[in-house]
Image (cartoon, rainbow, N blue to C red; front, side, top):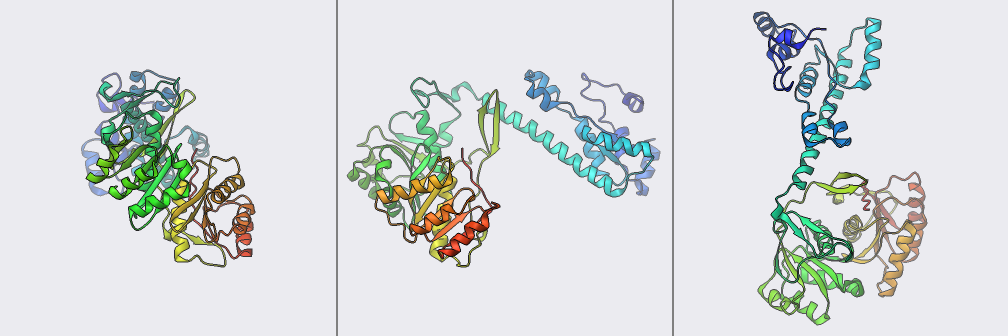
Length: 456
């Protein structure tokens, strides 16, 4: 075995942080054997070919998982190893790269047999190498994002009255003013904040005027109309009982008409959030001194959603998928009407923001009813139908959305028997055809999207 120092004529420095980043090493890997100019330079600088690169990256993720100190974790960020892998993978025409322990066994067998690698094998190994560096870099990126969030300036930590319940302490770490400006009302609580984020997330998924009423992070009222005043009226009518003590959100300016109607309804509102408010609306809301009025700043929400889990942290991409008409695949004999398509797209957003299992029933752009947080899909539908009947909301011609596939045809049959004419769902169940056949039996139309929206 030849030590790197004997090739570079330079010792490893800075505690081993710099040892392989040298022209003799990278030149040996990256020179193109079939390029005359490269070969001249190689001879001039006395660079030897390196045809095989085997790298075992520093155990960054393992050190992190074992609870290493910040200094230990940082020192396990491999610099030279990553560079060697990328260089060898880039020059796969001439170089074999082994970037994972999982490749050792197959590679050793090939060496024992005295076989040469093929271009296709080297290309495959190069692809696997870039996958290794991508995962490695992603883990490092996520670590620094978490550290950044955890080490925000002490002035960005806001103590809240309590958490979900009075016996739980709570605080917000960050700058609320980046998200909204509070124009009036009491201080915001833990529950206010998570419900308000849920509310603004719903209406932000719509381009047309939309109004949502949220309770416990679920939409109990939602309507998408040509104007925001009508959207509020329809959203409220769907469930005036649950609207009491709710979070109100609009994706358009809230004017005096809405404020007057809220006053007339004597509706107790915890929070109302919108991009802006008219002067008349603000004057009316002043009468509700405790109501928190927030002007939404429309920031780019974090791409990652983070929560604690056991002794660690779970992180996932934010669900930003919003179904479009082009995403809809008609799977039944009857095609949907334009009105049904519009309602299905509204319903799809509604179920995306409801706790699973979730069903949304929409008619004329308004959430007629919903069932959520159930352990079976049929129970979610029964809940939604019962609620619609209680508020005397006709389901004839309504559409049904499910955030996940129908495991059985029972939901489709129950929906059809209650006048629902269309269904939108992700599809993907081995039992899809049974649900499609049931829809055809009742002359319902059904579309699949390919996008599941579980929300726990």
